[in-house]
Amino acid sequence: MSGRIADEIRNSKPLASLEVEAALNIRRTGDFLEKWTNDVLAPAGLRGDEYNVLRILRGAGAQGHPSSEIRARMIQDADRLPAILHTLRTRALIDGTLRVSITLRGLDLLASLDGTLDEALRDRFRQFSPDMLRTVIDVMERLRAGA
Image (cartoon, rainbow, N blue to C red; front, top):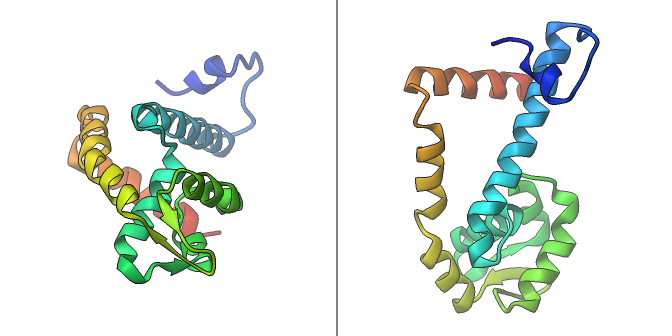
């Protein structure tokens, strides 16, 4: 199956190395997963990064978190945090400025989504054995640790 990325990106020349091929696959897959997650969450009017922030704030409890702590815990690009907070605040899903907390409305929205993304992920990843998933996790963690 090796070499499919070149076809996907319509590259007619051989890729420079296996490392380039691996990096392109990781980036392409990350982009796919982001779009796929957004599609799963779209009926709730959320994007994946907004959902991530709401989950972070739910875990913080009533005391909430300063935005610097939210930024440190985010999975995706934290540079979008001000825009995410603005969107969530406008929808009355979060409250506060120096310390941000989730509102009852935000908690209700998350409760309505509990299990939705997890179930979709289980369905999407069903084709992979636990050993394959552990290998993927190990490779990704080792790649980030080497940075």
